Structure formats: structure tokens, C-alpha cells
Image 1: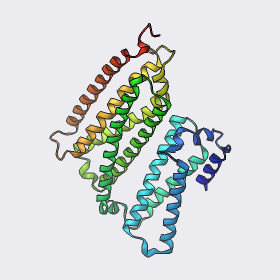
Image 2: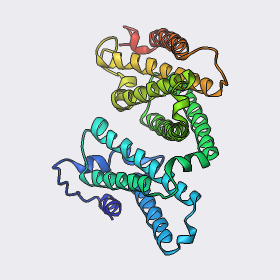
Image 3: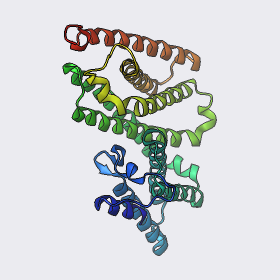
Image 4: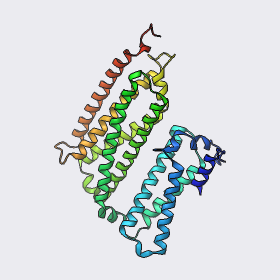
Amino acid sequence: MIAFYIRHKKNANEKLVCPLDADCGAVIHSDYSVFLGLPVEVLGMAYYGVVAIAYGVFLMFPGLVSTFSVFAVLALSTAAFFFSLYLTSIQIFAIRQICSWCLVSAGLGTAIFFTTLAGSEFGFLSLLAEYKWIILMLHLFGFAIGLGAVTITDVLFFKFLRDFKISEFEADILHTLSQIIWLALAVLIISEAGLYLPQMEILNHSGKFLAKMTIVAMIVLNGVFLNIAISPKLVNISFGGRHEHQKGELARLRKLSYASGALSLTSWYYASALEMAQNPPLGYWGLIVIYLFMAISAIFISQLFEHSFYRKTPLSNPIAK
């Protein structure tokens, strides 16, 4: 009903009453209110509807309750829980407005997740172990989608800059690709947790696993920085029509956008290489030192490329100014 209420007010272009005295409209009408072309409140209605039907069927027909059906509901609830965390973080750090109704919806999603987690009679770890093959398939899927999306993003970024600017349409394409990367990252983290928990004692002593998790954490931090600091100003960074681009905030953000893109690409490829490696000869610190060397080298090359590219722009020519 909350998701339906938000959808109704949004379609009618009516103002939501926000008990927290914030601007709910700024949240539900922001660029982040649509995920991969679908309004998030519609995704919420679909999720809550499926969960309600599933539990209704479980109550009326107990014979249909199987390990697979419980695993499916648990997987869906886990995905919704992490998606709620993502949306709440966007409200706090990117939009900087809090929607009361969105918070209540996120709270209900969290409650569903934890009651599902605690209420199964089959045992959480046993479910993860039994359906490890599904979790592993999702894990590889997350790597494949993330690696492809981050590669396409970097290729399109430089293709869009051939005219020394990024239009609103091009920025929207990059924003959609960013959402795909976040989706892949969420699938990667959730599936990694599903693989980790049944065998945590073994993996806690695996240098490969710990190095991979360190790099995934770096990907998350870099992605947060991109979403908060760079993406909202991407068009302004690229246009720079009448401002001095050689110094100031826009120049710093332009350089950081190149560095962040290089770091993202290097991190995804290195993490994927670790995933494919069977028994790397190096321990945790050896793998991290190689990663740091590759990341620093990539950032350095990106700054050289940025400097070379900027010298070709009309804006860098005093006569053109």
C-alpha cells in the first residue's frame, strides 16, 4: 500500500505529506527514482506482491513448502534488503533528502528479510550449501555483467568526449550503465556471502579470497565516490563553456573522473582474474601489492591521457577562448 501510495502521488503529480519535514518530492522525482527504466515504487509493488502471494501459498498449502521455495523467497528478500540499503544511501548521500514513506518501506523490507532469515525450519547454512551451484552461477553472472558494463562505460566515455563534451543524453546512458554495474556488484557481494558463510573457516585463511574481497570493497568505495562527487556534475565538467577549466573544482573533478574510471576498470579485471585463478602462488599481501602497482600505474596513465586530451580541446587554446 505504501508503494502504491507513492506511485499514485507520483502519477498525479501531487505532493506527498512527509512526516520528517523533508522534501519527499525531491526523492520520488529524482533521477534515482528509476532503476534500469523501471520506477522503484513499481519494483517495490512487485516484490511485496510476490512475497505476499508466496507466504499465502505456504500457509494454505504447507505441502508446497520445500527447500527450493524457501531458498527462492530468501534470495528475493535478500536482494530487496540490499536494494533498500542502496536506495537509502542514495537519499542520504546523493539526493540529501529523506522520504519518510521510502524509509518505512525500507524498514518493512528489512523486517521481512530478517524474519525470513530466522524463521526457516530448514536451516540457513544448509540451504546455502544445498544450492551452492545456483549461488555460484549468480556469482559468475555478476562478474560477467560487471566486467562487461564497466568496459563499455569506459569505451563510451571516451567516445562521447570526441566532441569535447558530454550531453544530457550521453550522461543518461552512462547513468544507466552505472546502475547495471551496481546491480552486478550487488549480485557479486550477495552471492559471495552465500558462498562464504558455509565454509568461512576455510576462506578466512585464503589469501585469494581475502584479496578479492579487499578489491571488491575498493570497487564499492570508488563507485560511491563516482555517484556522489562526479556523476551529478558530469555534464558541467565536460561543457565548461565560459569558466576557467584549468583550475578550480571542475578541473579537479575532471582529473578525478579519469582516475576513478581507470581504478574501476583495473579493479574489476583484477578481481575477475583472481576469481578465475585456481591456486595463485602468492599470498594476500603479494596479491595486494600487485593490485596496488597496477592501480597506481593505471591512474598515472589516465592522468597523462587526460592532460594530452585536454590540450586538444578548443578550451585550452587562448585564441579560442
